[in-house]
Amino acid sequence: MIRPSPIDWSTWSAPVHATLMFVVREGRILLIEKKRGLGAGKINGPGGKIDPGETPRECAMRETEEELLIRVKDPVKLGELHFAMSDVPDILCHVYRAGDFDGVPTETDEAVPLWFATADIPYHRMWSDDRYWLPVMLEGRTFLGRFAFTGDDVSWNQLVTDVEWPEGE
Ligand SMILES: COc1nc(N)nc2c1ncn2[C@H]1C[C@H](O)[C@@H](COP(=O)(O)OP(=O)(O)OP(=O)(O)O)O1
Image (tube, rainbow, N blue to C red):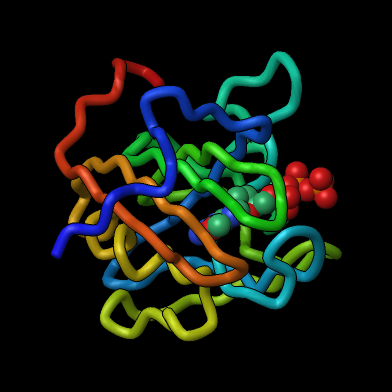
């Protein structure tokens, strides 16, 4: 049975815009254990909130540099995630993927770098939406995910794949 959405997505907008960056190369993905802020203690990609005047791509690169001291090369936007939250402000998150970087992933005040085999993603330590869209991201396909949360749990979800994002976004 298809459950009706609790959210009217045609009028939904988010007060918080954020990014995630995933480096994937040679069968491995670079993740972080987040040390502070929203999702502290969870495993995720590096990322954070978009600053005023910053593009999503600039934010994803800046946050990755701040959190892991690496400079990713040629990131590509693959996805957008629309999170209707129950206990924090709603979030629109742009998802980027890159295959290379300069520097050495290094622990900072914000994050611990962790490499995982792409066949061994630790979903049980991640946000509960990730298991829906991360496999699509690993295939290199584009996507739009919409998720309603109740607390930390996904209570409704929709994933549209093979979305065309504007050039250069
Ligand atoms: C709700 O589900 C989520 N799933 C996933 N995979 N990632 C999420 C979810 N909600 C938020 N995120 C990501 C998006 C951002 O990368 C971070 C949150 O950013 P944060 O609040 O830590 O932003 P900063 O700018 O780094 O923080 P400060 O305001 O402390 O500087 O989580």
